[in-house]
Structure formats: C-alpha cells, structure tokens
Image (cartoon, rainbow, N blue to C red; front, top):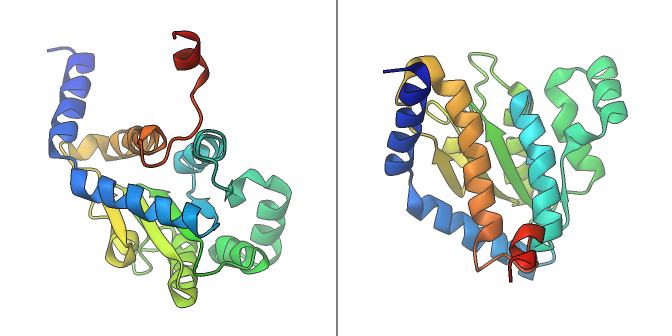
Length: 199
C-alpha cells in the first residue's frame, strides 16, 4: 500500500469515528450566539492559527456572525508576545474586546492546551477567562483534547488512528468540521459562489 493510500484510509477511519452529536451541538450553540448577537473568537496557534483565519472568513461571509482571530492582527500579537509574554497573548486580546456571555471561543488545536506539559498555555488562560465571563466554548482538537475538551460546551476530539499523524489529521479535520458547520442549514444564510452559479 502506498503512503497516499494509507493516509487517506486513515482519514476514512477518522470520519467513521467522528462524534456527530458533538458537531450538531456545536451548530445549536453557534445558532444561539447568532440569535444573541454575540461574536465568535477563533483561537489557535501554528497551523491551527491559519485555520482560524479561514474560518473567520467563512463564518462572517456565509453564516453572518461577527467573528475574529487574534492571530490575524500581527502587530498586536507580536507586541503582546514581546512585551507581556506568549502566555497572555489571547487573554489580553479578549479583555480589550470585552468578551461577554453572549460570545463564543472556538478553539482549533492539536493538543487542546495543557499547563503541566506547557502545551499552548495561551489557550488555557483564554479558556479560563472565557469560562469566568460565561462565554460559550467549543473546539476541534486532537489527542485527548487537553484543557479544551475538559471545559468546552461541545468539543470534537479528532480520533487518533495513527500516532505518527496526529497533527496532520487534527488540523485537516478542523477544516472538515468548520466547513460542515458553515454549510449546516441551521447556520448557512449566504450561498457560496460556485454553488450559486450552478443553479
């Protein structure tokens, strides 16, 4: 079997094991944020930060929800990391944005955050703050889900089918889940370009 076949077979196995109920609950929670005129803040680092940027576009354009990714603001991100430290980059951004109980934190992460192992402590601090103000929390994470899975209102932990491919599968399925959500009939309000031209 070629590596490509193996990798794609792993993806098929992940799809079979995905927690559909958790995804449907996410759709309901996002719908409530929209009803409440709340905002979604997408938090992630590394490749997950890139996914956050893409998701912000889709949730604003297709779903019509005010959405942001702090990592899109490179000047503020680097100033905070330089002056205040990496751990506080998200929490301080959220404080300035006056995060409220109407809002949502949407986490994309492979590890989900773990203070003991010093994995994404910036996500953990942001999640603690979000919970303290009553914000909704959802996430798509890998491995055991870390702190995100512990505190989220709904969390999809991408099943591990190959310990050598946790990161690529976790980040790939972040995209699968958020694209599912923006296509969900409970959320989608604007047609995407190619689908609209086909009719």
